[in-house]
Structure formats: structure tokens, C-alpha cells
Length: 316
Image 1 (spheres, rainbow, N blue to C red):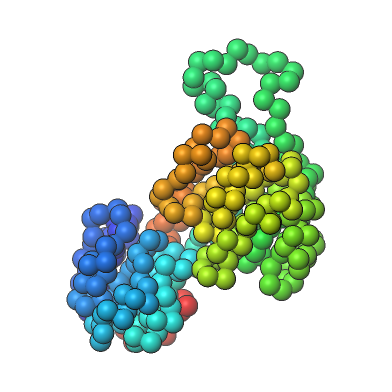
Image 2 (tube, rainbow, N blue to C red):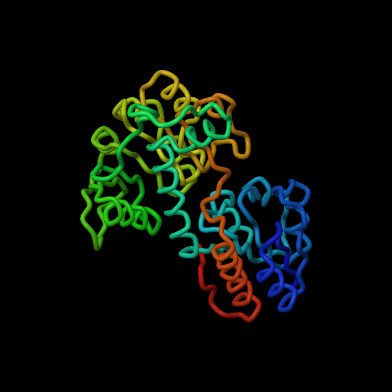
């Protein structure tokens, strides 16, 4: 069986893929083009797609009777794949849950602390050579310890964020999700999103991407937040209406934002780049050697199971 991996992987993952499979490793770091995706479906038995490889219903409609029978997605999120259309075309889809949880939760806390304590702004000040020394009212930010965090989405990643906030910083945790969760820590379930965001100091987004959560955070939700509140997004860019967010930040409706993902990634609006009260990261959620290798090996575990006719470990 022929395998296509759509972007470069860590050395360990590439070595395993070469040793175990008839693999083509694409060298480009950009998403697949439409033509490349059509070739992937036509010429390979298995494809390991990555974020941005848009396997849409339209693509499957243009590729009848595909040779490909498995999309072993590299990543826990798979909103770039139309899973129902893939199934209708006879293609199974898997993902890599679990491997990304702690690293993504760490980035959420990185953004929360950096934005609250104005660390990015301070680092830019030092690098500019304009820092004139310490004084009692210099760059006063938001205290984090003991405050209230509202987490939107309480899956694996949301729970990992909640534990860090509660046990690391003594924060009170509230959350919104489709249903209340059985948790091993104290947290208040709030079924109404507007009530949640109005009651907390920090709003952290940890929901999946896709049609159900697109623009979940819109002008109405941003208006319900406290003027001193911060918004942190480590979910998917399209969860936030970026135009509404820029307007809320410009007007002082909210105090700031920490973003690892963007609605039209990798395009980041200049308006966000120009704001000192916004922390911007280049989608670093899972960007460690260990985690990216774990993700790659999990994707290859799905590939190996498919090749050997075993049940897929992580079907979507």
C-alpha cells in the first residue's frame, strides 16, 4: 500500500514511516493544493493529512472511486476534513487524541499569563531600548492568582487547563459545555454561555472547530464580557468572529486577548498586530519535539492497523 504524508515530520516519525511503509514524504510546509489533494486520493491508499489540507465534500465529489481508503489525520482536530463525505466515498478517518492535551493546555496558560501580566509588551519595551527602569506604577497588569476562569469546552484539553488554573493558581473554575461533566476537581457548570462570560475574569476557548462552533464567540458574547476580562483562544480560529473581536478590543469592551489561532490562518489582521494588549502566537499549541513525535507515531499506528487489517485505534 502506498502512503502519502503531506508535510515534513520529526526525524523519528519520518524514519519509522520509511522503514515500515511505501511512503512519499512531501517536503513543502504549506497545505496541499486542490490538485495535490486530487492526486492524493487517486494515487495513494493512505494519506496522513495535516491542518489546512481541506478535504471537502466538493473534493470528494470531484474524485469518484478514490484509491485512498484512509485519512489518518495528524492532529486531534479534523474540521478540515468533511468526515461524512469521506465515509460516503468509502474512506475512513482517524485522528490523534490525547497526545496534544498537556502541550495545548500549557500554551493556554502561557497566553493567559503573558496577556494578563503584559509580558509581551514588556519584552518589546526592553528590546526597543526605551525601558527607563522600575517604578511603582510601571505596566500594571491583571493579577491571576485567585481570579475566576471560564472555560468554554470541557473535554480533555479544557480539563487540563482547569486543573492548571485551579491547582496552580488557586483560581475558581466555571465552564460551559453541551452537558455537565463528571470531574475530579471543583468547577461550576454554567449552561448559558452569556452568563458564563459575564461572570469570569478570563475566558478560555477549548472547543473543537467546525460548523457547530463557528463564530461561537461573536459580538453578543464579547459585549457580555466584563471590560476588564481577557479572551484566550487555543481552539480553532473560526470559533471567534475576528471582526467582532477587533471591534471589542478597539472600543475597550474587553481588556485584551491571547491568540494561538486565527480565523483565516496564517493571515493575521494588521489591526491585531498593532494592539499592545493582544498576545499573538504562531499556532504553537502542540509545538514540542516530544508531542509532535507522539502525534506522528499515533497517526502511523492508525496506518499500521489499517495495513494489517486490524481495528483502527482512533477512528473519528
